[in-house]
Length: 273
Ligand SMILES: NC(=O)C1=CN([C@@H]2O[C@H](COP(=O)(O)OP(=O)(O)OC[C@H]3O[C@@H](n4cnc5c(N)ncnc54)[C@H](OP(=O)(O)O)[C@@H]3O)[C@@H](O)[C@H]2O)C=CC1
Ligand SMILES: O=C(O)C1=N[C@H](C(=O)O)C[C@H](O)C1
Image (cartoon, rainbow, N blue to C red; front, side, top):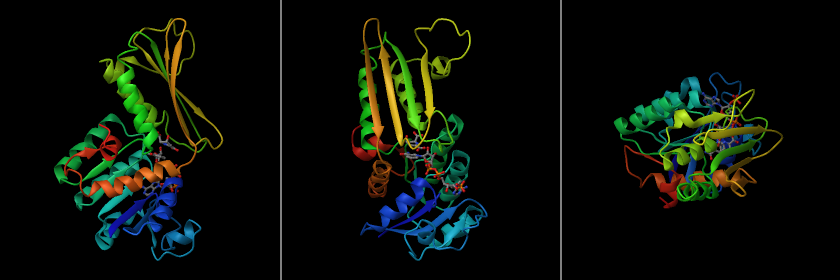
């Protein structure tokens, strides 16, 4: 049985992951962690997420280290916010707990530090801005397509629900980095976040990133390749969080056989590198 701790256990993704794990024969939830000093402390997480008692208490993240020492999970799954996830990764790694991280909004420095921590502590890790199969095929298509359309103007648009805290989405940032990398452009120099005011004509190199927020949109991403007289648009739309949760289940089954000391991504999990 694979033992899993979930941080952000009461959130949209965390609660969905716990519900899905309960349907699996080979995976179990052994710890549920919420924000530090949560008023939910001590309550059964099943009651908190509306499915009735499952025999796992909710803990505040201020006790993360002792909770992990007691519960001894094989893997910690984190869908929270970047600064919290960064601290959680440090604690999990120091205890030799493997990690599946879907949280987005890390700075470049945090992402690099996570890779260093994983290497130094020799844990196993899957980190991905988007766990949906379709999005990871979308990234692969972008990698193949971009060099062919290298003289087209490229713009990225993402749309998400009105509760999302980070912007642009992690997926849009991964798409941007994939494209900039394929074109051998310096990501810091070519990134343009939205446009406002007298910005002048568009440069050939720039890549625009635009974020829409509203209602209950689960997650849409479009890359527009715009030429003179034609344009090609590649779009992925998530209709339900179940697609991300399915990716987490695949990651959990993949991780224990993955390489230690290295951050794997969903392309590794799906075998589409
Ligand atoms: N990789 C992927 O496929 C996907 C990634 N995501 C990403 O996952 C993250 C979470 O998204 P979502 O579930 O919608 O967000 P939610 O806000 O619904 O859930 C986040 C949860 O984490 C809790 N939390 C905050 N800080 C801590 C902490 N220090 N320790 C433990 N729990 C904490 C929050 O509590 P409180 O509400 O009280 O602050 C909340 O319950 C985002 O970064 C999002 O972009 C989302 C979907 C798919
Ligand atoms: O916050 C969300 O909801 C999502 N976040 C991820 C991101 O930032 O890319 C993945 C997905 O789009 C949903």
